[in-house]
Length: 336
Image 1 (cartoon, rainbow, N blue to C red):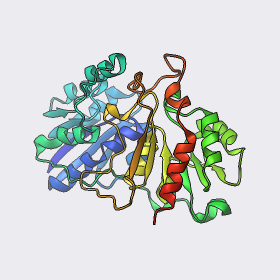
Image 2: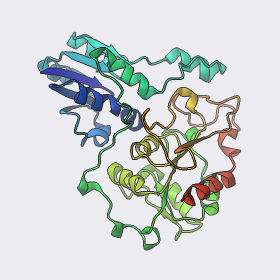
Image 3: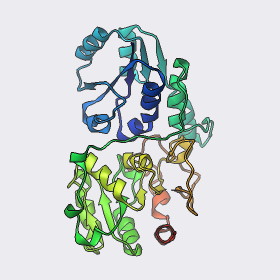
Protein backbone atom coordinates (compact mmCIF):
# COMPACT_ATOMS: atom_id res chain seq x y z
CA UNK A 1 0.00 0.00 0.00
CA UNK A 2 1.17 3.50 -0.88
CA UNK A 3 0.75 6.06 1.91
CA UNK A 4 0.38 9.72 0.98
CA UNK A 5 0.09 12.81 3.16
CA UNK A 6 -1.57 15.92 1.71
CA UNK A 7 -1.03 19.28 3.44
CA UNK A 8 -3.43 22.23 3.17
CA UNK A 9 -3.97 24.16 6.39
CA UNK A 10 -6.58 26.67 5.21
CA UNK A 11 -9.02 28.04 4.24
CA UNK A 12 -12.50 26.87 3.23
CA UNK A 13 -12.27 27.93 -0.40
CA UNK A 14 -8.67 26.80 -0.90
CA UNK A 15 -9.40 23.38 0.57
CA UNK A 16 -12.47 22.93 -1.64
CA UNK A 17 -10.42 24.04 -4.66
CA UNK A 18 -7.89 21.30 -3.82
CA UNK A 19 -10.56 18.58 -3.59
CA UNK A 20 -10.06 17.17 -7.12
CA UNK A 21 -6.51 16.20 -6.12
CA UNK A 22 -7.87 14.03 -3.28
CA UNK A 23 -10.34 12.30 -5.59
CA UNK A 24 -7.91 11.73 -8.44
CA UNK A 25 -5.19 10.33 -6.16
CA UNK A 26 -7.58 7.93 -4.48
CA UNK A 27 -9.33 6.73 -7.63
CA UNK A 28 -6.28 6.46 -9.87
CA UNK A 29 -3.48 5.16 -7.63
CA UNK A 30 -4.96 1.81 -6.65
CA UNK A 31 -4.13 0.59 -3.15
CA UNK A 32 -3.42 3.96 -1.55
CA UNK A 33 -4.00 5.39 1.92
CA UNK A 34 -4.59 9.13 1.69
CA UNK A 35 -4.09 11.21 4.83
CA UNK A 36 -4.79 14.91 5.18
CA UNK A 37 -3.59 17.59 7.59
CA UNK A 38 -5.42 20.90 8.01
CA UNK A 39 -6.30 23.36 10.75
CA UNK A 40 -8.85 22.10 13.24
CA UNK A 41 -11.03 25.13 12.54
CA UNK A 42 -11.57 23.79 8.99
CA UNK A 43 -12.41 20.24 10.06
CA UNK A 44 -15.94 20.38 8.63
CA UNK A 45 -14.71 21.17 5.12
CA UNK A 46 -13.37 17.65 4.51
CA UNK A 47 -14.66 15.61 7.45
CA UNK A 48 -17.04 13.59 5.27
CA UNK A 49 -14.85 13.35 2.18
CA UNK A 50 -14.79 9.61 1.30
CA UNK A 51 -11.46 9.92 -0.51
CA UNK A 52 -9.56 10.80 2.67
CA UNK A 53 -8.69 7.89 4.95
CA UNK A 54 -7.26 9.69 7.97
CA UNK A 55 -7.14 13.24 9.29
CA UNK A 56 -4.64 15.21 11.34
CA UNK A 57 -5.54 18.61 12.74
CA UNK A 58 -3.18 21.45 13.50
CA UNK A 59 -3.92 23.42 16.69
CA UNK A 60 -0.59 25.12 17.40
CA UNK A 61 0.76 21.64 18.12
CA UNK A 62 3.29 21.16 15.32
CA UNK A 63 5.87 19.31 17.41
CA UNK A 64 3.31 16.75 18.55
CA UNK A 65 1.89 16.42 15.05
CA UNK A 66 5.30 15.75 13.52
CA UNK A 67 5.78 12.82 15.92
CA UNK A 68 2.44 11.36 14.84
CA UNK A 69 3.22 11.90 11.15
CA UNK A 70 6.65 10.29 11.41
CA UNK A 71 5.02 7.17 12.82
CA UNK A 72 2.92 6.84 9.65
CA UNK A 73 6.03 6.33 7.48
CA UNK A 74 4.60 7.97 4.35
CA UNK A 75 5.80 7.23 0.86
CA UNK A 76 5.02 10.73 -0.42
CA UNK A 77 4.08 14.16 0.90
CA UNK A 78 1.94 16.51 -1.23
CA UNK A 79 2.24 20.11 -0.08
CA UNK A 80 -0.69 22.14 -1.41
CA UNK A 81 -0.03 25.05 0.96
CA UNK A 82 3.67 25.83 0.56
CA UNK A 83 4.38 27.90 3.65
CA UNK A 84 6.92 27.80 6.47
CA UNK A 85 4.83 25.39 8.54
CA UNK A 86 4.40 22.90 5.70
CA UNK A 87 8.13 23.17 4.92
CA UNK A 88 8.95 22.21 8.52
CA UNK A 89 6.75 19.11 8.18
CA UNK A 90 8.42 18.08 4.94
CA UNK A 91 11.88 18.61 6.42
CA UNK A 92 11.01 16.56 9.51
CA UNK A 93 9.50 13.66 7.55
CA UNK A 94 12.31 13.51 4.97
CA UNK A 95 10.14 11.78 2.39
CA UNK A 96 9.78 12.46 -1.36
CA UNK A 97 7.55 15.51 -1.67
CA UNK A 98 5.77 17.56 -4.31
CA UNK A 99 4.89 21.20 -3.65
CA UNK A 100 2.45 23.54 -5.36
CA UNK A 101 3.85 26.69 -6.91
CA UNK A 102 2.65 29.59 -4.76
CA UNK A 103 3.44 32.30 -7.35
CA UNK A 104 4.12 34.87 -4.64
CA UNK A 105 6.26 37.04 -6.90
CA UNK A 106 3.71 37.04 -9.71
CA UNK A 107 0.92 37.95 -7.29
CA UNK A 108 3.03 40.75 -5.82
CA UNK A 109 3.72 42.21 -9.26
CA UNK A 110 0.05 41.99 -10.17
CA UNK A 111 -1.33 43.59 -7.00
CA UNK A 112 1.39 46.21 -6.52
CA UNK A 113 2.30 47.17 -10.09
CA UNK A 114 -0.58 45.83 -12.24
CA UNK A 115 1.98 43.68 -14.06
CA UNK A 116 0.20 40.44 -14.89
CA UNK A 117 2.67 37.57 -15.20
CA UNK A 118 0.26 35.01 -13.77
CA UNK A 119 0.28 31.75 -15.75
CA UNK A 120 -3.49 31.98 -16.45
CA UNK A 121 -3.85 28.51 -14.99
CA UNK A 122 -6.50 27.98 -12.34
CA UNK A 123 -5.24 27.13 -8.86
CA UNK A 124 -7.12 23.82 -9.03
CA UNK A 125 -5.22 22.93 -12.18
CA UNK A 126 -1.98 23.80 -10.40
CA UNK A 127 -2.97 21.49 -7.53
CA UNK A 128 -3.53 18.68 -10.02
CA UNK A 129 -0.21 19.40 -11.72
CA UNK A 130 1.46 19.04 -8.31
CA UNK A 131 0.33 15.40 -8.06
CA UNK A 132 0.97 14.62 -11.75
CA UNK A 133 4.45 13.11 -11.02
CA UNK A 134 2.59 10.30 -9.24
CA UNK A 135 0.86 9.42 -12.50
CA UNK A 136 -2.34 11.22 -11.48
CA UNK A 137 -4.34 12.96 -14.20
CA UNK A 138 -7.18 15.47 -14.09
CA UNK A 139 -10.48 13.60 -14.43
CA UNK A 140 -12.26 16.84 -15.34
CA UNK A 141 -15.01 16.32 -12.77
CA UNK A 142 -14.60 19.55 -10.83
CA UNK A 143 -14.85 20.24 -7.11
CA UNK A 144 -16.19 18.05 -4.30
CA UNK A 145 -18.09 18.90 -1.14
CA UNK A 146 -19.85 16.30 0.99
CA UNK A 147 -22.76 16.80 3.39
CA UNK A 148 -24.07 13.92 5.54
CA UNK A 149 -27.82 13.44 5.82
CA UNK A 150 -27.93 14.57 9.44
CA UNK A 151 -26.46 17.96 8.48
CA UNK A 152 -29.00 18.74 5.77
CA UNK A 153 -31.66 21.41 6.30
CA UNK A 154 -35.21 20.14 6.01
CA UNK A 155 -37.79 22.22 4.17
CA UNK A 156 -39.77 22.74 7.35
CA UNK A 157 -36.91 24.70 8.91
CA UNK A 158 -37.25 27.40 6.27
CA UNK A 159 -39.88 30.15 6.22
CA UNK A 160 -42.98 29.26 4.20
CA UNK A 161 -42.12 32.06 1.80
CA UNK A 162 -38.90 30.26 0.83
CA UNK A 163 -40.07 26.65 0.65
CA UNK A 164 -40.96 26.84 -3.03
CA UNK A 165 -37.48 28.01 -4.02
CA UNK A 166 -34.91 30.70 -3.30
CA UNK A 167 -31.57 32.16 -4.30
CA UNK A 168 -28.62 32.50 -1.93
CA UNK A 169 -26.72 35.73 -1.33
CA UNK A 170 -23.41 35.14 0.45
CA UNK A 171 -22.80 38.37 2.34
CA UNK A 172 -19.58 37.52 4.19
CA UNK A 173 -15.90 37.34 3.29
CA UNK A 174 -12.64 37.26 5.19
CA UNK A 175 -11.82 40.94 4.53
CA UNK A 176 -13.92 44.08 4.15
CA UNK A 177 -12.56 44.91 0.68
CA UNK A 178 -13.92 41.61 -0.65
CA UNK A 179 -17.49 42.48 0.42
CA UNK A 180 -20.17 44.76 -0.92
CA UNK A 181 -21.04 47.40 1.71
CA UNK A 182 -24.29 46.81 3.57
CA UNK A 183 -26.10 49.62 1.75
CA UNK A 184 -25.22 48.02 -1.60
CA UNK A 185 -26.43 44.61 -0.43
CA UNK A 186 -29.69 46.19 0.75
CA UNK A 187 -30.10 47.84 -2.64
CA UNK A 188 -29.43 44.55 -4.43
CA UNK A 189 -32.02 42.70 -2.35
CA UNK A 190 -34.60 45.43 -2.98
CA UNK A 191 -34.17 44.99 -6.75
CA UNK A 192 -34.43 41.18 -6.82
CA UNK A 193 -38.00 39.92 -7.12
CA UNK A 194 -37.44 36.48 -5.64
CA UNK A 195 -37.03 34.93 -2.16
CA UNK A 196 -33.47 35.39 -0.92
CA UNK A 197 -31.55 33.59 1.82
CA UNK A 198 -28.57 35.47 3.25
CA UNK A 199 -25.63 33.14 3.89
CA UNK A 200 -22.90 33.94 6.42
CA UNK A 201 -21.43 33.11 9.79
CA UNK A 202 -22.14 34.48 13.24
CA UNK A 203 -19.90 37.44 12.45
CA UNK A 204 -22.31 38.38 9.63
CA UNK A 205 -25.47 38.14 11.72
CA UNK A 206 -25.72 41.84 12.51
CA UNK A 207 -25.21 42.94 8.90
CA UNK A 208 -27.67 40.29 7.77
CA UNK A 209 -30.28 41.73 10.12
CA UNK A 210 -29.80 45.20 8.62
CA UNK A 211 -30.06 43.85 5.07
CA UNK A 212 -33.17 41.77 5.75
CA UNK A 213 -34.96 44.57 7.61
CA UNK A 214 -36.04 46.24 4.36
CA UNK A 215 -38.16 43.20 3.40
CA UNK A 216 -38.13 40.48 6.08
CA UNK A 217 -40.60 38.34 4.14
CA UNK A 218 -38.56 38.22 0.94
CA UNK A 219 -35.15 38.17 2.65
CA UNK A 220 -34.37 35.47 5.22
CA UNK A 221 -31.28 36.10 7.35
CA UNK A 222 -29.73 32.68 7.98
CA UNK A 223 -26.37 34.10 9.07
CA UNK A 224 -25.22 32.46 12.28
CA UNK A 225 -28.26 30.17 12.44
CA UNK A 226 -26.63 27.31 10.58
CA UNK A 227 -23.20 25.69 10.68
CA UNK A 228 -20.94 25.38 7.64
CA UNK A 229 -22.46 22.13 6.39
CA UNK A 230 -26.04 23.32 6.86
CA UNK A 231 -25.26 26.58 5.06
CA UNK A 232 -23.67 24.54 2.28
CA UNK A 233 -26.88 22.54 2.04
CA UNK A 234 -28.85 25.74 1.56
CA UNK A 235 -26.44 26.56 -1.27
CA UNK A 236 -27.09 23.08 -2.70
CA UNK A 237 -30.86 23.61 -2.59
CA UNK A 238 -30.78 27.10 -4.12
CA UNK A 239 -31.65 28.12 -7.67
CA UNK A 240 -28.68 30.46 -7.99
CA UNK A 241 -25.89 31.87 -5.83
CA UNK A 242 -24.52 35.41 -5.61
CA UNK A 243 -21.24 35.42 -3.74
CA UNK A 244 -18.18 37.44 -2.89
CA UNK A 245 -14.74 35.84 -3.17
CA UNK A 246 -15.21 33.40 -0.33
CA UNK A 247 -15.44 29.68 0.37
CA UNK A 248 -19.16 29.42 -0.30
CA UNK A 249 -18.56 30.50 -3.89
CA UNK A 250 -16.55 27.32 -4.49
CA UNK A 251 -18.97 25.13 -2.54
CA UNK A 252 -21.63 26.40 -4.96
CA UNK A 253 -19.39 25.31 -7.83
CA UNK A 254 -19.06 21.85 -6.28
CA UNK A 255 -22.86 21.56 -6.52
CA UNK A 256 -22.78 22.95 -10.08
CA UNK A 257 -24.88 25.95 -9.17
CA UNK A 258 -25.11 29.07 -11.28
CA UNK A 259 -22.82 31.62 -9.63
CA UNK A 260 -22.62 35.39 -9.95
CA UNK A 261 -19.19 36.06 -8.47
CA UNK A 262 -18.65 39.60 -7.18
CA UNK A 263 -15.05 40.81 -7.08
CA UNK A 264 -13.45 43.73 -5.29
CA UNK A 265 -9.90 43.76 -3.91
CA UNK A 266 -9.27 40.30 -5.37
CA UNK A 267 -10.14 39.32 -8.93
CA UNK A 268 -10.11 36.24 -11.19
CA UNK A 269 -6.73 37.44 -12.50
CA UNK A 270 -5.33 35.70 -9.41
CA UNK A 271 -6.45 32.41 -11.07
CA UNK A 272 -9.26 31.80 -8.58
CA UNK A 273 -12.41 32.13 -10.70
CA UNK A 274 -15.38 29.81 -10.09
CA UNK A 275 -14.39 26.31 -11.20
CA UNK A 276 -16.52 23.44 -12.51
CA UNK A 277 -13.97 21.07 -14.05
CA UNK A 278 -12.64 20.74 -17.57
CA UNK A 279 -15.24 18.13 -18.52
CA UNK A 280 -18.27 20.16 -17.40
CA UNK A 281 -20.63 21.39 -20.10
CA UNK A 282 -23.47 23.74 -19.19
CA UNK A 283 -26.61 23.40 -21.32
CA UNK A 284 -28.40 26.65 -20.40
CA UNK A 285 -28.57 29.83 -22.48
CA UNK A 286 -26.23 31.67 -20.10
CA UNK A 287 -22.76 30.66 -18.84
CA UNK A 288 -23.00 28.78 -15.55
CA UNK A 289 -21.01 31.54 -13.85
CA UNK A 290 -20.27 35.18 -14.43
CA UNK A 291 -17.52 37.29 -12.93
CA UNK A 292 -18.91 40.66 -11.88
CA UNK A 293 -16.08 43.16 -11.71
CA UNK A 294 -15.41 46.68 -12.92
CA UNK A 295 -11.84 45.70 -13.84
CA UNK A 296 -10.49 49.00 -12.56
CA UNK A 297 -6.82 49.80 -13.00
CA UNK A 298 -6.37 49.37 -9.24
CA UNK A 299 -7.82 45.83 -9.25
CA UNK A 300 -6.67 43.50 -7.84
CA UNK A 301 -5.03 45.40 -5.00
CA UNK A 302 -4.45 42.43 -2.71
CA UNK A 303 -3.87 38.66 -2.74
CA UNK A 304 -6.27 38.11 0.14
CA UNK A 305 -8.17 41.36 0.71
CA UNK A 306 -7.71 44.24 3.13
CA UNK A 307 -9.60 45.84 6.02
CA UNK A 308 -10.10 49.01 3.99
CA UNK A 309 -9.53 50.29 0.48
CA UNK A 310 -5.88 51.40 0.18
CA UNK A 311 -6.98 54.29 -2.06
CA UNK A 312 -9.89 55.15 0.28
CA UNK A 313 -12.56 55.27 -2.44
CA UNK A 314 -13.61 51.57 -2.68
CA UNK A 315 -14.87 52.21 -6.21
CA UNK A 316 -14.55 48.53 -7.14
CA UNK A 317 -17.60 47.81 -4.97
CA UNK A 318 -19.29 51.19 -4.58
CA UNK A 319 -19.67 51.69 -8.32
CA UNK A 320 -21.06 48.26 -9.15
CA UNK A 321 -24.57 48.51 -10.62
CA UNK A 322 -26.98 46.55 -8.40
CA UNK A 323 -29.76 46.94 -10.98
CA UNK A 324 -27.65 45.15 -13.58
CA UNK A 325 -26.90 42.27 -11.18
CA UNK A 326 -30.61 41.96 -10.31
CA UNK A 327 -31.52 41.91 -14.01
CA UNK A 328 -28.96 39.15 -14.52
CA UNK A 329 -30.63 37.15 -11.74
CA UNK A 330 -34.07 37.61 -13.28
CA UNK A 331 -32.85 36.50 -16.73
CA UNK A 332 -31.35 33.35 -15.30
CA UNK A 333 -34.38 32.50 -13.18
CA UNK A 334 -36.65 32.86 -16.19
CA UNK A 335 -34.62 30.49 -18.38
CA UNK A 336 -36.60 27.47 -19.47
